[in-house]
Length: 247
Image (tube, rainbow, N blue to C red; front, side, top):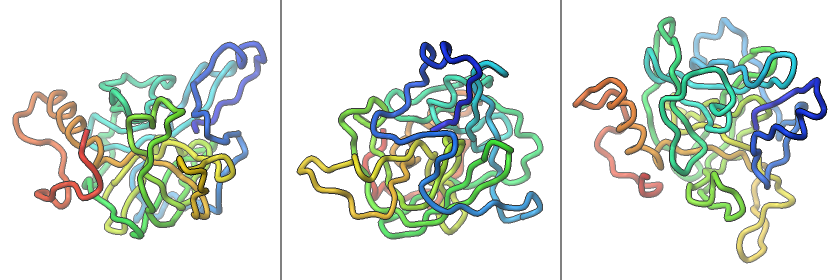
C-alpha cells in the first residue's frame, strides 16, 4: 500500500512492487476518514516519511516508525524500494528493520499488545509529509492463502482507517504503545473466509502485530547492537502472548 507515481508507462508495466492480490490500491485511495494532525501536536508519535523508487521516473512514498536512535520499522514492501539500508526482513511477514538517523527523536514508544475489541490508532504520512491519524478497534487475525506476506504470517485486522502512503506506519494502542506495522487494505467485497462468509467489519485495515514477530525483532535488534541484554522495551514485560505464538 505504498503509493507509487510514474512518468514512464513502460516502467510501470515492468517494475512491480508486488502489491497484495486482495488489496485495492491507488494513489487517491483510503478506506475511511482520517485526521490530518498539526506538526505542533506533541501527542503524536514519531513517524517518518519514506521516499521510494527512482525520483521523477518511478517514485512513491511510505512510512516508518523509529524504535531506537539508529533503527526504524517499516513494511517489507516499502523497505524493498526505499533508499534506507535494510538491517533485516522478517522471513514471512510484511515487516522489516531499516537503519535510520533517529537522533532527533526524543521519545521512542514501548512495544505492546492489543486485545480483541480494544482501540487501535493508526499513524502514517501522506504524499506531502503530513501526519495522518485513524481510529478504530482490533478485531481478529487471519491468514490469506493467496498472498505471500500473509500466507504464513497472521494479518491483524482493524477497522481503523488507513490510506496509501501509510504502509510502514504504526498501529498503536490507547496507552501509546506500538503494537504493529501497517501493511495494507483488503477489499471488503473480495475478502471471504474459507466458508465463503464475508467479514462483518466496516473496513479491513491490515497490520503486522509485533506480538507475532517479537522473537525475531528482539533477536535482530540485539544482534545489531551486539547486546546480551534486550534493547527494546516491551509492555507488559513478562506477559506470555495472548494473541498468538511469536514467530
